[in-house]
Image 1: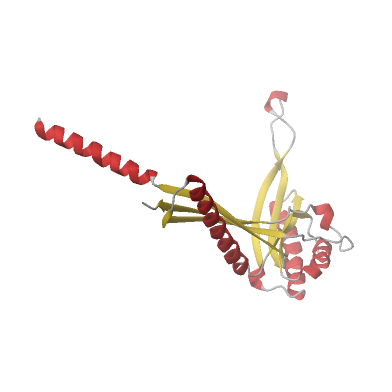
Image 2: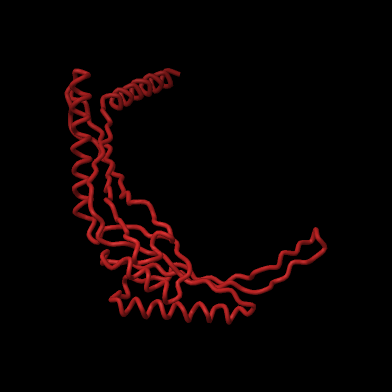
Length: 229
């Protein structure tokens, strides 16, 4: 049993050493933010039609979507800026129910096609939306703003986050009367916060001005420092 006691004592000392090592660290989280004016927008709109015949419902949708895509092409949109976000065909039912003694039946079909487009010229955004509604768009899922080249802002936000974390660590160490050691670990996490999505009523007409506002590019960084002996 002597060897068992030796192993047990060794494990206790090892655990204490690990705990002591873990305790001799400072963990801080820094945040960096950069404000930027958006220079692009993403609009999501589409066409929905109902018809007793499924093929006819889809045909009506396809006709309007073709007109919308053609108009976007004439407005200078490139293929990389256009994407089909959703294409669906679903039955519509009558209001009958088994409880009322009337069986539910399919009375027609609803066809939908949604398009997502990146608008790289914000000055023409209102006119673009107005043109698309004229061409047959009758659903609008949202408008969000973004940046064509976000990397410089992301880099700046990241640098500010690291600077903020370093400053916090120095303050903590000074207040606790200890010295900071080497950086043991850095974990990054971040994202961009855009203005709220605009509703359909806001952007239905080119006569209504659209305010893009400012975007906040945010980055969070967690840094673990050793405490110097």
